[in-house]
Amino acid sequence: MSKICQITGKKAVVGNNVSHSLRRTKRTFDVNLFTKKFYYVEEDCWIVLKVSAAGLRIINRIGLDAALKQAVAKGHCAWKDIQVIG
Image (tube, rainbow, N blue to C red; front, side):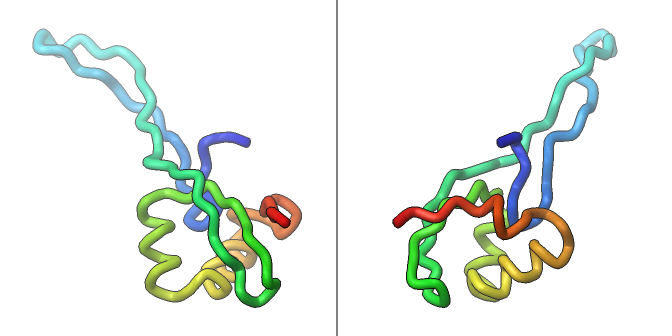
């Protein structure tokens, strides 16, 4: 799986490193990703998500079920991509 948040859809972007002499070289700005386990009450199971820090705040604010439904509706992840543990 690539470095993409499953809740917000954030992914790495490309920019420039700028030195003191203003020489520019390409670099990537990676996303602040975490691999987290969540207890999904509606399905009575544990799931594993790759979530950014902003995605964690969204889950805390609106709840896991609403955040997953919103992410699937926007196309950030699919139900089949969510890893279920036991």
